[in-house]
Amino acid sequence: MRGDTYVTLKYMNILFVLHYLYCGIILFPEESERMNRKLWGFSLFLVIFIGVIWMWNGSTDAQEEKSAFSPKSSEQKQAPSQPIEKKRGQASSKPVEQPEEKPKKTPPEKKETQEPAKDKQQPSDKADSPDDPDQVDHSNDRSASTPRVVYQGPSTSKQVAITFDDGPDGKYTPQILDILQQKQVAATFFVIGQEVRKHPAVAKRIVNENHIIANHTWDHSYLPKLSESRIIGELNRNYREVYKTTGKKMSLMRPPYGATKGIEKNLYQQGYQIINWDIDSRDWTMPSPVTIQQKVFAHVKSGSIILLHSGGGDRSRTVRALPGLIDKLRNQGYQFTTVDRLIGVSPYRE
Image 1 (cartoon, rainbow, N blue to C red):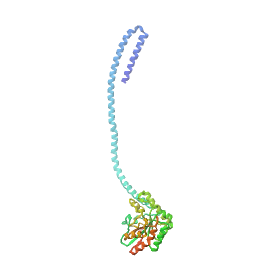
Image 2: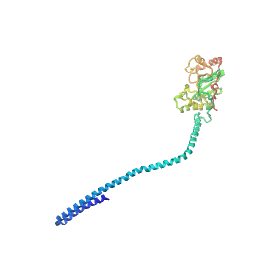
Image 3: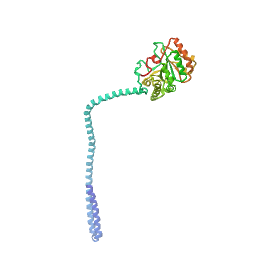
Image 4: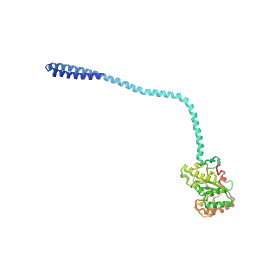
């Protein structure tokens, strides 16, 4: 308000001077000298008066600025105090609520963490098992002493198990079945799903003649290089094909090339007992029949699992070596059995 008064007086002075000049010079020129002196006197008075007012206005404005600044600073100091009080009020209210909530929250949290764990384990077993509505996981039926990967059976009795990989085919597998039937020998066939689809009658004959049929994947892929889902797909696709063809739900499997590094647990969790071998006849290199026999005779012992092939290439040498192999092992006192009987596990799921 004081600043406005100063400006108003200033402009009134200017207007008064202009009006005085207009009246004295234009309207009454004969009295200009006398009015001139009065004008200068009055102007001097107004200048002094305005100067006093300006000085007074300046001092009061400075006081107002100080007074105006101090409340702001106090407000700034008080402003954070209000949220602090609110925070304190909230913090003080929480401890009162926490003792009431803690006993209510902690018990259900423990139950929830325990119960879902059980729920997760149950469906995981179902998901890990081959994809068939009638299948049951018999991983619990296996002996606790049975390792995840079996290379040979116990040496308590003089028994050996002959196994055949990569079949069935339409040429060599039937010839091998003929020899086994003649020699009254039961064997274990690790079959490929694609070959089962091509030769379903041979797959049925394997089962009908009391041999064991087992999983050797769908297309003989190298499992350690596959993802977990691909591995399960290889097993499940073969499983479904064999089940559709023979009605058997396989629980024994042999990974192609015997490669199990890093995947043993995954295969075992699918409900499979992994069967490898301790004697490789190397018939897949197509040596002479005598060489095949010598490879076996040099390393055979009680509980041995012998690897031969009934498909996947020219197996004519295996066919020619098989009769003499059986005869000589029998002469050495060995009895022939299937892998499941050798190690004491179930070959099929119920």
